[in-house]
Length: 284
Image (cartoon, rainbow, N blue to C red; front, side, top):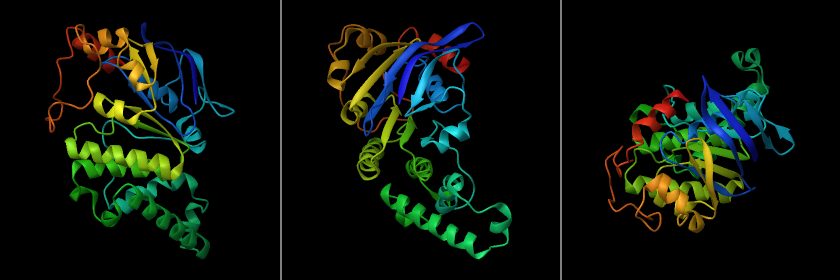
């Protein structure tokens, strides 16, 4: 995926200002920045939820900026969200929703349980089970989602996106609210997904330790602008990143969190610009 000079404005507010970066095939690319930096807006552009005022987003030979979300999904781009979106029912029920775009049988054939529709549903269910195994949900496949832990519900969200058979997976804060053990497990799952399925991953995440350990490349946004990009070791020493993301007086981005099991929502003081950034993020 190649993002070039993307600008997004909302009622006079510039949420993204000429942002550009490239997600290489088979890579894990992290998009980071303080609250209000424009990360969620960028994801909304890539997934077709938001149309930019200018710029280009190309995925292979396809221009995405004028396509609707379902058309983008059909091209092989799947997304998770910050807030868990679940239906009632079991893990299997939720994963089968992700197979809907790949289903050929029509509503009538499915409702009448015609042999061709039954065979197709059986194939999709077996594939959903394979994906559940890949993300560590195999033993929970027939379990109601209401009985799952928070971390397992987040993995259901990832598995449902994978059921679209994407070539690019967009993960929006996949470890938010998790404890240390759950974060590590999710990081291992992302690596396994990349290796087993050969897809690319673009991840928005505030856990800097996880980003530095997991990503092949990092793009940093601040107030809607791209201020740095490159390998994790390059980005963690970049003066612009230190000023924008961590404040002054530090030499590099820290690796693991010092608190092995922080409370959800805890973390370092975001600094005096926090309220302004949060207001910008909400407006986006």
